Length: 187
Image 1 (cartoon, rainbow, N blue to C red):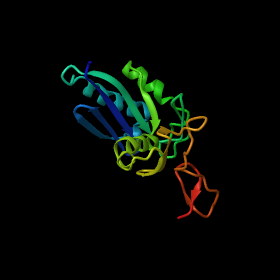
Image 2 (cartoon, rainbow, N blue to C red):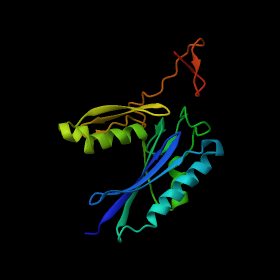
Image 3 (cartoon, helix red, strand yellow):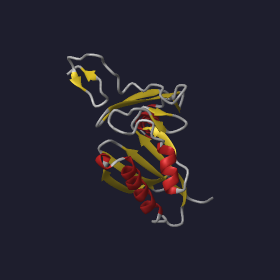
Image 4 (spheres, helix red, strand yellow):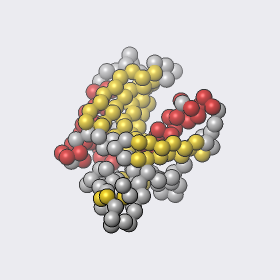
């Protein structure tokens, strides 16, 4: 059996984190960069792809690349991998992230909301595994707020990939503080 590794990407509005992992060795390498949103989504995709390629070049003692996975802020339409008005990624509405990265890398990628990816990791490697539960929910706090749901051991996507996407709710209160999405929130 050939030894493999995978590369995971955490695309955030503030930071871009890329890591290589193998079941046999655990976490092997990490790269952390600022997410250069002001330079446009093409620059962010280029930074992401350059980091993935730099990890692939390391070879890891002949291990084969099993896959590349990307966790991104939502809302995210799945299975297409298209972002739908993400409040902290201005100018990314309708952006086909999967296609952009696959074209750049010439390799297929898996796309998931960052909240769902974190929930799956917690279920399989963290508290879910430790407590032997197969359903859980998490709340993520970073530049934005997100969440992920695991039901019966699987990510719950709903009908279009946005199931459980409760991290951002538009509030119509003109007396509230302005939000990056154009809505208002209660301070």
